[in-house]
Length: 530
Image (cartoon, rainbow, N blue to C red):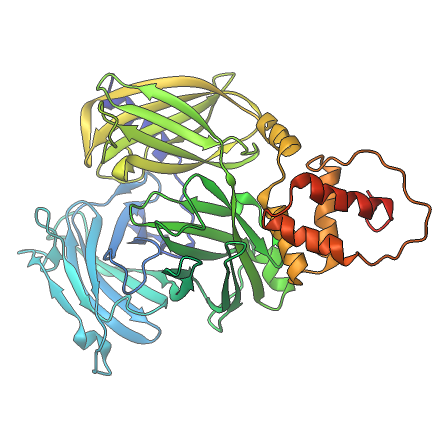
C-alpha cells in the first residue's frame, strides 16, 4: 500500500505544467483564458455521454468547469449565467451556482415546443442558493434543464458568463464571457434481416454527414454504405470524419473477441483508426475515425465505407493481484504494432472472480531504463483515478518501440471514493511485432478474403484485387513456390474460373491451397507480376 499523499504530490507535479488546448471537440470545447484578479481563467464544457443523441436511453449531463489555466485548479464559489443556442435560437437562459468550480447539469431534452421563442418552453428544477440566487447542487441532487435542448443533431453554442467567483457574495465588476460548443451527432437506424429471419437494428451516428445506400451482405457478413458531408461541414486540417456503428450485443456478424476490418473507398483503414468497443452491457460499438486530409479532399466529400468481421484476436494478458484481494487482467491484441497507440483493456475482479464494479485506478508504464513513458491518474477533480465502470476500462497507450516495459497499476478507490491507502502491483512485460510476423506466415487475414468476394461480385475492379494479392505475396503473407513462367502467349484477361474460385474461397467453399493454385496460374501466365 502507498499513502494517498504520495500520489497527490505526483498529480500536482503534473498540473504545474498543464497547458490546455483551446479547441473544439464534438462533446464540448475549451474556451481561451481571460484575466481575472491576476489569474488566467479558462472554461471547459463537456457533454456525457459524448456521443449522445435524442432518444438514447442514457440521459445527458452537461459539465461546466472554471479553472486557473496555469495550475489546473478549480475556482471556488462560482455564479454562472448559462445561455444555450441552437443556431440563432436561444433555447436556455438561467443562473446557476457551484461551490467547487465544476457545475453539473442534468439535461432532459424535450421536443414539441410550439413557441417561436424556444427558451420560453425550457424549465429548470432544483434548489436556488440563498445568497447567489442560482440553481445549485445539494447532496446527490443536481440542477435540471428540461426543454428543446440537445433534442436535434448539429452544433449548439454554450455561452457562459461568470457573474461571481471565489465567494457567493463576490460579484465580478464585469461579466467574464466564454463561448463554447457542443456537437450532437446525427443518428440513423437501419434494419438488417439475417439468414435466420431475425431483424436487427443497426444505428450509425455521424457528425456533419449523412448515410446513404446502406446495405448488408449476408454472405460476407459485411455492412456497406456511403457517407456524404452535409452543408454544415467546415473543413479543418488534420481532422477526422468520426462515425459510430451501434449493434445489438447478440448481433451474430460482429462478436466480442474478433477484430473489425474497415475499408474506405476499397482501401483498408489502418487499425489505429478503428475501435471495437464491447464494454457496454447491451450493445457493441464500432468507432471509426477517417483522416479527412487523406480521403475527403480527394473524393468530392463522399466516401464508400465497408465494414467486415475480422480475425479472432489473440490477446496478450498480464495478471496482477492486490493486497485487498482485487485481481486485475490487462490485455491487448498480440498483433498490435509499436510506434502507435495500442488499446489496453483493464479488467478488475473480486476474489470470487466476479467483476469489481466502480474501481478507480491509476497506472504508469516505464521502459527498460526506468524512464516513465506514459501515465494516467484520471481527470475528475473530485477523486484520483480512472473509473472502471462495470469493472472494465480501456486506455489507448502509445508504446514507442519493441522492448521490455514495466506496468505499475494503482488501485485508488471504488464507487467515486478514494481509499485512505492505495494498493500497488507491478509487472514487467515484453511487446514486439514478432507475433505479427508469425501470424502473417501462417494465416491469410480475413480482409483479403473479403476483397476476393467483392471482386467476384464486381464490387471492386481487377486492378484493386490484384494489387492486394501482390502486396500479400511480397510481404510473405501468401507464399507461392517458385514456378517457371509459361512461354505460351496468354491473354491478359483473368479467366472466369479464377474469379469463381475467389468468390467460393471468400465463402469458405474452397481451401486456401485451391485458391493459391489460381494465384499460381496468374503468375505463370504473366497476369500477376511478383
